[in-house]
Length: 327
Image (cartoon, rainbow, N blue to C red; front, side, top):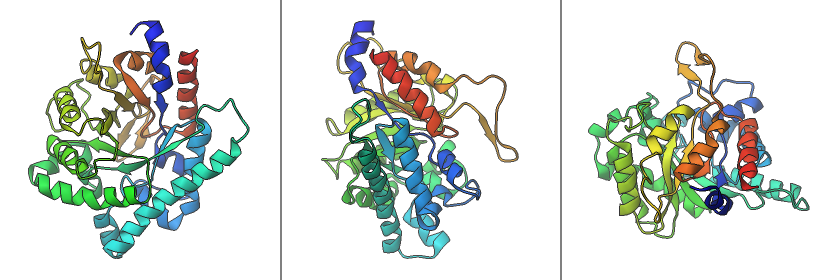
């Protein structure tokens, strides 16, 4: 886009929050990785840390924060906490309450500050893929999709989505989707909630073209956007990927389009690599996420945040960069 056009669309750009587990770790003395419930366990054991993490991201300038429900599933809570389905749903509802509490506190803090950009933050209900509850890394392969039906996936996602919506989230963040079947199931399921808006974010390979299940990402992104209810999908994009791999995945989605652009969303990792034995590790010079923002805006990205290993400090940098582009 030309510079003038970029300026006119900058008011539409929304800054997201960062890696919830990453920032949450600054409020905890215990380890998060390795727990089958991951950050969801702290909804019960350390709700004050969950609240504080949301507040960190709001203070850093996030326009949208996500509930701590990526790995909050009925299956997981029943299996690992020994509680009932209804008790599990109540934990998911409480997750919305903690995000709302943070927004309320933040709103009071900024009441008289007219320089604050994110004056009316929104809450997105976070929904991880089925693979996240398996605790075997399969949200990064999509291997489970071969063996389960679209109907199973619809029925599995429905209770959490309903609980989040009934508790009053503003939108849904359906993220790290690794396979075509799960994407199609979600598009079908969202039609049961016609007044709901959502973004879809996918788990992709580093090859610049593929979903982790091997299918073409760009074709699926366009198909999901076009087959959903009109206006229901706020944006489509990628998360949990190295920032330098994003552009190749997104660059052809809006190619040669002047109108009817598909809004895009991007919230990559820091660029560090994760290994089971050594955890997160830097490999040489890592390009900072915010260095790519101009490039992504030119592609039609409207929602920018961070995923694994991104802190509130990173979101503050993104906020600053987006605000610079506005001037």
